[in-house]
Length: 65
Image 1 (tube, rainbow, N blue to C red):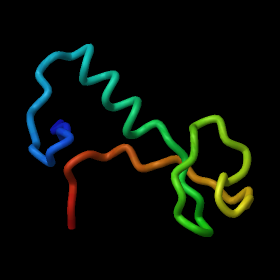
Image 2 (tube, rainbow, N blue to C red):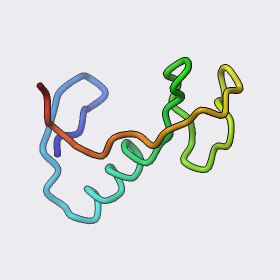
Image 3 (cartoon, rainbow, N blue to C red):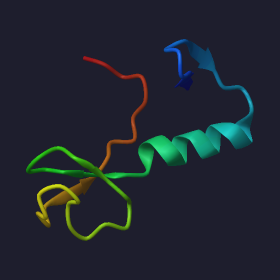
């Protein structure tokens, strides 16, 4: 997995513990199906539009079609 630095430079993460932290911070979210906002994983309603129509964020990394 590649992490993005504050300057936009991508760098590979080789430490497994750090990789687990990064994956949980980036991928462990819910996405609103109505407005597309990112929400915390424990959210019941969207923070932006208050819709209850939330889905978990996709877990696949680096796969583009």
